[in-house]
Length: 361
Image 1 (cartoon, one colour):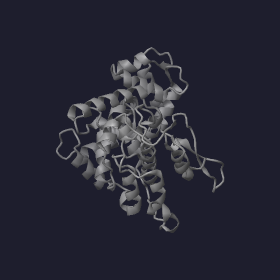
Image 2 (cartoon, rainbow, N blue to C red; image 1 turned 90 degrees about the vertical axis):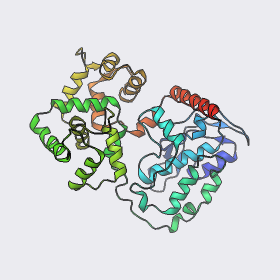
Image 3 (cartoon, rainbow, N blue to C red; image 1 turned 60 degrees about the horizontal axis):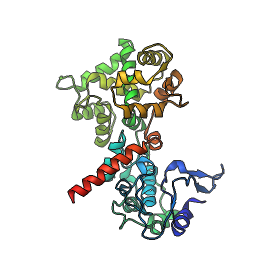
Image 4 (cartoon, one colour; image 1 turned 135 degrees about the vertical axis):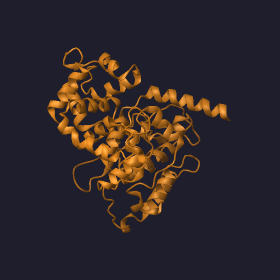
């Protein structure tokens, strides 16, 4: 089924896909003009006009707010397509978080960021289409047919070809989405590196720390990056600070700064990775077991299960050195999280949201 007529064919024939995301769009072959096809109708459902559904299904970052509120119709497909369009134009989802609850809160809270690069270079028509596809009110959200009639799509052949440049600073955003396990592992790597190798990062930290209080504020981080010739927008520096601030005090201490610097450098040295693995592998079995993760990361069962789900690629319930190395070298970013959400956790969150709405009305 080709991607564009999918809107008309599915909805006009009474089918809601309910799980639109980039992974469910595939080219039919390897040619340049290959048709794009929509796949995986495992969560799709037939509907009649006016039907409402309550089952929480789909993939985390692409869920419409009304799915979380357990009262939705075919409009959810338009929302998911709007999220995909946003990602195609800037590289990250419009509503993100590092766990299920934060993702759900961001979706419900709404609000689109059109200030950060590359949005100033994106046409007004494109942003208008995204706003109308991501309208939190499904009653006023564009229909599938209206999306296809929008000027941005109708005039696509005559639109100027404007380069968006580096749409995202992917290393920063990977760190933002990194699980707690990898952040701690990077800290272990830092502690095992020779002082002379870390010295340049420590010196940079002290140069940025203008008030010499041992912590970098947002302002100091911004000024330091600018002095070093890195023109990073304030919104991205805020995101970096939030991601790297593992103790949650709103600033970066020297260890946190060194850790994020190592991530930006993309640490791949086998010696340091092996030392970090041994740190977690307490019994020397050659595997990091669930109990060993609990020992280091605390008794947050949901976080532990998410780490195992993300990193344990052979699904044997433990983490081998090869799996650990793959995580450290490639990262676990939001694209992985979009496939690995906990449906049970989202169902719990949606019930909580429904109760809050009922009590406030």
